[in-house]
Amino acid sequence: MISDLNLNLNLKNIENRDLNLRFGAIILQRLNFWGNLVNTFERKNYNCLKSFFHNQFHYNHVKINFRKKYIDITKFLYLKYLLKTLKLILKFNSTIFYFKTNQKKKINIFFGGGIDRSGIKKISNCLKNYKSEPFQKNFQYIVYSSKLKSQEGIITDIYPLQFIFKSKFSVIEKFFICMKINIKLFSFIIKSFFDKKIILLFEDYLDLSIYEFLKEKNFLNSVISDVSYFGLIPLWINEKKKNHSSFFLWDTINPLHRITFKKCGKYPKYDFYFPFIKADKHFLTINSSNNIEKKILQKIYAKPVKVCKPLENFYSNHFSKNKVKKNEVVISIFDCGILDEIQIADCKINSFYSLDTMKKFVTDIVNVVNKINKIKNKKYKIFIKRKNDQVTGDSDFKYFEFLNLLSAKNKNFKVLSNKSDIRNLIKVSDLTITIPFSNPGFLSQMIYKTKSIYYDPYNKVDNTIRFSKINLINTERKLMNIIKKL
Image (cartoon, rainbow, N blue to C red):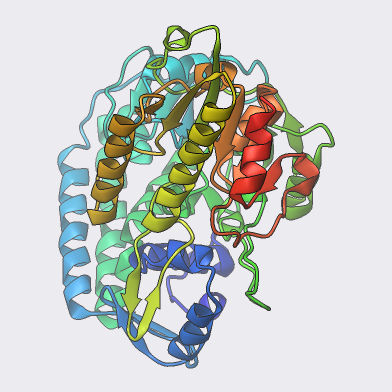
């Protein structure tokens, strides 16, 4: 349906497919139930949604009719984005006389998934690990970030193209270019009066207008990214006549392995990030012995894939090996972010990654270890490293309470911050147990050679990772047999 939209923006250097994909990504962000749809495991949910999506529905100020291939937004959302648009125009024009930087150095823009939880110094060291393209010392880096301050020779900004424009052009150049850009922007706003939904693309339109002038000066060398989240991938990267290179760093491989659920019939769910990732070359920083990940990427994108050493770890060193005694058997647990049940019209959509699943996942492991502990004369230590420490909803709060209570009742069970160093934790572990199919499971077995299993507490997940030689366990009995052997 998205591919059939006619957005009437007349962007000469952007394919309609790429424009529609970008618009689709913005709509998906508004329809924030996508995570539940991908990870639901009950067939009744699919049957309910199938009839629901065939009719017009409103959700979060978006109006959609799949049968008529129609998408629009409410007046409220339009006015909200129009106000945001006018603020962006005002901010852009009021800061055009920005200082000038080194004219000689070309620029690499880095969009990274772990940026805001890491330090600039660690990002700098990470990038220096690569001696080949595009990681060379004679380039200036601009890192996309809203939280970190510029330091260590790296600039941070949430509007990287605007920064380049303000810092590289002369005052006279900026004055005349701004006049041309503003004419385009106000023309765009007038068009939005007649087609409200295009206002969602204003930031992309502004960046495209700026990029046209940056191309003439050849300031930009490359765009580097390691984040597959479609909301962070701007439209200008897809320019047909671009004069920069684009690179994608795969420091996780779990998006390559679909998660499917038993008894769901013809409704297998695939990861849908792939169409939004655009790159001239892919760097794979984690790979199994049979190169299956490299083969998958080459098949999906028909682009060069280079296997290279892992990125330097982004996490702070909050986990010390001194927490573990020599005679202890260490089991590390890795959970996942919780997806609450949501209501869409008459459909209640739950997720495999629910509060109940996480509680049973952790409880089963602790109970099994305690049972073995009574039989065998060994000391077991269980660490759980949280996916995140943020409490964003009622389920998160209940889960944190549950973990703290479980830790208080079991002296051998410790809850770690999500900032704990995952490398040290895996290295001291005798076994890692991960919720399917989160990345620490692959990291443990493939990179650090630590025994790793995935545990499905409700026996709902199909085993689609047999090639990786990581076991998918779905009963407490099987879990006990593995832990007994440690």
